[in-house]
Structure formats: C-alpha cells, structure tokens
Length: 315
Image (tube, rainbow, N blue to C red; front, side, top):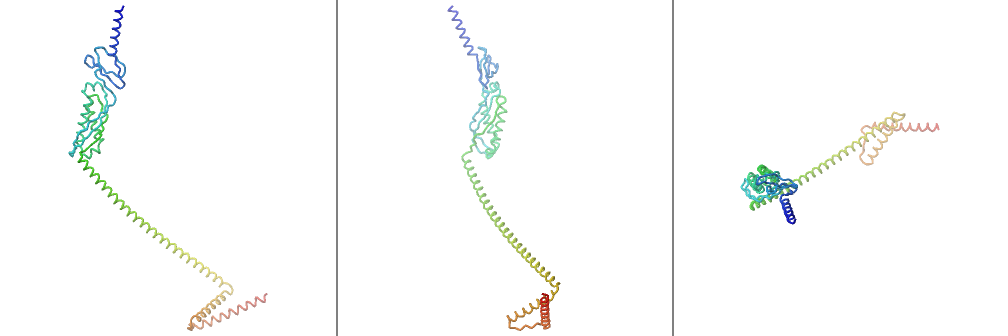
C-alpha cells in the first residue's frame, strides 16, 4: 500500500514537472518560435500552448511591437569635403517572426549597420549647407535603403530621424561669421529701407499738403468769383428794375415833365458843387442848354402850381 502511494506520488510529480516544462504562455503582441528536434516546427501566437515533452522547445522569442534603436554618431563627408558627425534614431517592427530568426543572425545589429552605411552614402551626395535644409529627404532615403534589405529579415523599417548634424569647430566658426555678416547686412538693408520709406512718407505728406493748399486757394478763388458774379447779377437786376420803373413812370401822365425837372435839378446842383469846391469858373460849352433847362424848370414849376390850384378848388 505504501509503495503504491509512493509510485503515484512520483508519477504526479513527474506529470507536474512535464506540464510546467511543456506549458507555454505567450504574451500579447509576441510570438514564440518552436523547434522540434532542432528544426522549425511552428510559431506560437499570444495565449496558452502545450508542447511535446523532450521533442519541442521554444527557440526564439520575438516582440511584434515597434522598436526604437539609437544609431551611433559617425563621421560623414559631404561633396564639398567637409566632415560632419551625424547620429539618428531608427524605428522598426518585426512583421515575420520566422524570417527575423532564420533570415539573419541579429536584425538589430544589421539594421543599425545598414542605417550608418546608407546615411554616409546619402550625405556624401550633397553639400554641407543642404544637409541642414534637406533632413527630411535624407531620412526618406535612409528608410528606403534599409527597408529594401530588411524585407528578407521579416522586419519593416517605419522611419528614420536624424538627431544631430555637427560640423567641425572651424566650420562652425566660419558659419557663425557668415550668419553674423548676413544679419548685419539685413539690418543695414532694413535701416536704409526705413530711411527711404521715411523720406517717401515725408515727400508724400508735403505733396498732399501742397495739393490741399492749392485746392483751398482754388476753392477760395472760385467762391470769390461766384460772389462777384452774384454781386454783378444783383446790381444788374437792381439796375434793370430801376430802369423798368423809370420807364413805367415816363409812360404815366406828367412823367416826362417830372423826369426833366429831376434832371435839371441835378444839373444845377452839380454846377453849384463845382463852384463851391473850385475857384475856377466853369462855363458850359452850349449856353443854350442852360437857358433851355431853366425854361423847362420854370414850365414844370408853373405846371405844378396849376395842378395844386386845381386840387384846392376841387376840395
């Protein structure tokens, strides 16, 4: 009885050990490569698996996640014979775990070496100044070169990023002097442009001011001309109105006699004023005009008296 229990216990321990040794749990986004008697058997995806004891074994473990690799700094020579130190970062991913195990011994080292070789090749085709301007182009060329070779490795190169491009100190000093000269040149151009614009603005201001003064003078003259024209129009209108009224008065009974009397009075008054202001005797060229005017004046006065008398009798 005791021997049977011992045998059962030993068998149970053996079974447990076999289960522990042959049971495999594959993590998420991972694959295990199983070999049977030293030959590829199958790839285990994520989950729980049982292997055949003593025949199967897990030979390789591969992660299917995206991997990040630092590419060491290296010296690259440009077409203008300038040596620059360049380093970068490589992003890749295993897409075929079997090829990554049997297609190459170590895909990480291979990818790193190929990235450095490809970078030296693409940098050697351009000048120093373009290496700073065309980083994206350099990155794409490196990715294309590595990805083409990595197809046989079961690896997909996602992208490559250049971290730093470091020229020699002498080149850095020369570039600094060049940039300083460029900054001074731009500052000088900006200053001259500012002065030129300032002069233009002042000239434009003076031009506008002169135009406004000219326009003001022009408007003033126009206003004065319009005022004078209006004045002439008003005087002409008043004169015409006076002439019209005189004409109407002359057409009335006794109008011509009154006009003659008024003219005679003005004539005599003007002669009286001349006699007061000047000791020189003024004799009219035609003495008959005076006698005629006096006669007309006496006739008018006589006619006025008769008209007054008639009015009194009627009253």
